[in-house]
Image (cartoon, helix red, strand yellow):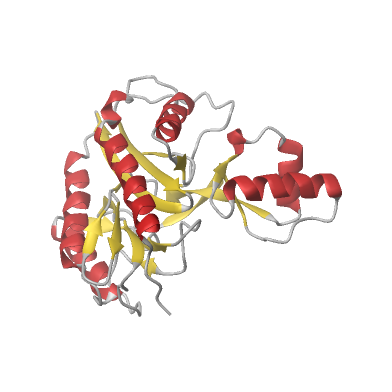
Length: 295
C-alpha cells in the first residue's frame, strides 16, 4: 500500500533537501589544502545543525579509491592533500525525513573528465525518471553514458530508496544494466548516485578497514540495565540512522553493543583494483504527478 505524504512531511522533506543543496553549493568554502579530514567533516555536520537540521549520517569523505563509508575517528590525523580526487557525501534529516547528496571535487587531480561523466550520467538518469519508470532502465542509461566516454561504472554500488529514518529502504537503483525488477513509485524518495572509475579498473568495491560509521540493527535492546539505558539513549537519538563513532562518548558500551550484534560498524568500501572513483548524487521526491529533485 502506498501512503501519501502529509503537507507537514512534504515540508520536512523539501527543507532537508534545501539544507543539503545549499551546503553543497558552498562546499568549496570548506575545502583547503592540509585541512584535517576531521575538521572538514565536523564543519560540514555543524552547518547542517546550524541550518535547523540533523545529519542523516556522518559526513562521508572518499579520497581517490575510497568510494564510501569512511568518516574520520576522533583522533584522526589524516589531512586533505592537494592532488587528490575528493568525494563528499552528506545527508540531512528533519524529524527523520531525509535528503542525501554527494559531489566529487578534483582537488588538483587529473580526473576532471571523470567527474563530468558522472554528472552527465546522473543528469540523464534524472531526465529519464518518471512515475512508473522501470528501475532497470535507470541503471541501463547510467552504464551506457559512462561507458560511452570510456569509463566504467562501479557495479556493486547503487542508489537506493529512502524512508523515514532509513537511508537504505530496501529498493536499490543500479548503476549498470541488470534484471532489477520494480518501478519508480509515487509518494516515494530515492537517491540516484552513479559511481565512476577508469576503464582498466575492476569496477567494483571490496571491504576495507572499519570506517567509524555505526548503525543500530536490532530494535530489542540488551538485558543488562546500564547497557540497556545506553542503548535506549542511542535509539532515541539516532533511531535506525547511521552515526559516527566520534559522536559517542562511551566507547566501552558502544563496543559491547557491537559485540552483541545490536550495532553494526560499516567497513570502508574501496575500489577493488585501487583505482580512483568519482561519485555524484541527488535525492528525488515523487508525488502522484511529478518527480522533484530536492537536492
